Image (tube, rainbow, N blue to C red):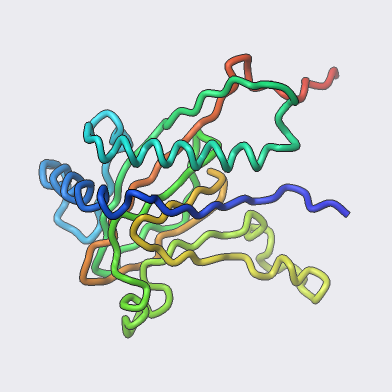
Amino acid sequence: MQALWPVPIDVQRCPDAEAINPVLVRALRAIRAMDTAAESSNFYASNDDLISRLQLPEFAVLLNFMAGAVQHLAKQSNLEAWPSGKLMMDLQFVGCWFQIQNGHAFHDVHTHGNCSWSGVYYLQIDSSAQRRKHQVLGELNGVTRFYGPYTQFQAGAYMDMGNAYLQRNSIDIQPEPGMLVIFPSFLAHKAMAYEGDNDRIIISFNAQINARTGNLIHPYAAT
């Protein structure tokens, strides 16, 4: 028996969150305030050039933490796939941006392109206990929902106890300030509607990992 094509998701907590998060929250609010094209709404998404725009030591600390977490997860996920021997790898953030939401705003189901790994870091959000008290949103207030890669094939599919392992087709992650979630870029996900005393503020990224000698592992078959 083989469990093929796993979907690894990793949750880490930044040890420096208490020191860096308040500084980054103020910086991101300032960027939004200076964006003359931004609409006055309950949802804001920046461009994906945050790395070139935000030159703060606190942001450098966060980037180093995120890069190390991605490297670790990629290595663990590819233990049986990467060629044996020493490999020289380069990790590159090919996009980094932030979002601010409140007032029942949400980010609908989507995936990320041009990368192998993506991640979301939670800078600010109400506590889970406080969020759950919301009379309308309840348990789902501000969570990040991930959908199984087989979800698109389940509509109208036959279900019995034999494929019960497929029938839980989503998982909800309760955000906490300082939490980082890393996931494969193909994995569909959604930021559920949120309303709270504090804005829900996140930093997201896309990352590529390339071998300096090239990424071809399995030779093309002759036809």
